[in-house]
Length: 247
Image (cartoon, rainbow, N blue to C red; front, side, top):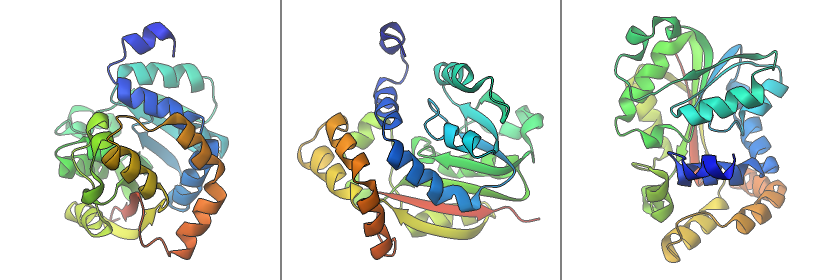
């Protein structure tokens, strides 16, 4: 984004974080490869932001509908990917909107897979967010959710980014099950990230993730992935769960 667009951004902390992670290619690829087994058919990516993961879906031949709550991000997504043959469209979407498929019936039972990465924690009524996703899924479709893990890690970073809370595998699985989604998998993600998050956000009370630290972390992703594997994904900075809508 230009300096003028930054100045008028409605989400300055979120935009800065998204731009930092845009340069973390190894991390983004790891995240994509982690959720890919649940992805099929026509995908809706909720909270696409500036497209850090969107590009991976498109490059791997998934038919993608990108979306975001913020119009400024929708414009960026359209500018970046508007000419891509695998892009079905870019839609303005608010998961906190009650009765989303009643107001927008074209979204009901439409998608084979819905991806919501670092989205649900921004919505106070997280049950409504999951219900809206369920209603947009085709029967047999999957919802894949990634949220921050462990409430004891809630710190200044979470406050700056507008997070209401953090989750565990148990609480996230219960959230999906509450909306009649059959949980087909769950795991923690990025155990090593806990160290930096606690050190910078809790102990040092920084307001943003240090860019140079993220660059170093990105280079270490092959090692970080090994640590997740060796720990059997028993702990992590984030938690992922997938739920299937009944046929």
